[in-house]
Image (cartoon, rainbow, N blue to C red; front, side, top):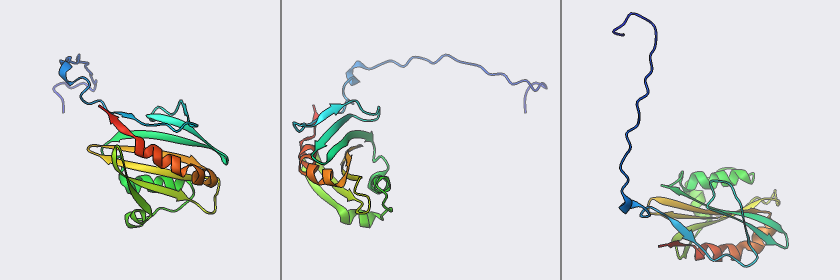
Length: 168
């Protein structure tokens, strides 16, 4: 229904009113992570969603390590682990089954869940992953490479995860 009898649709653009910026808030919401990088790892330019990317060399080949952080639970543990399982050709698991294959560890950033995901039928791809569930934020560390490389890099990966901390 309209006040006019014409079928003509009109659109209007209204200028946005500028919101005042509170300089006292600047920097208060920054979340900056730091870590101790293993000597042989090389930081590389990664995808725009990544906080950092590394090439992880082993005698079995190179792996791709990513660090990402998202606000909230970012889909939760079940959705993320099942996505990773799918990436290496494995079927999804229930949350109870996922909890059975997870390890809990503690680092400078706090407690985290650690996963070693291997498809015995596809030795060319495996994943080590850690999930840090922080207050209002989730941090993911994920290493993808072949099974032999995952086995070789596991100790360095765990040390790396334990070294991550928030720069204050």
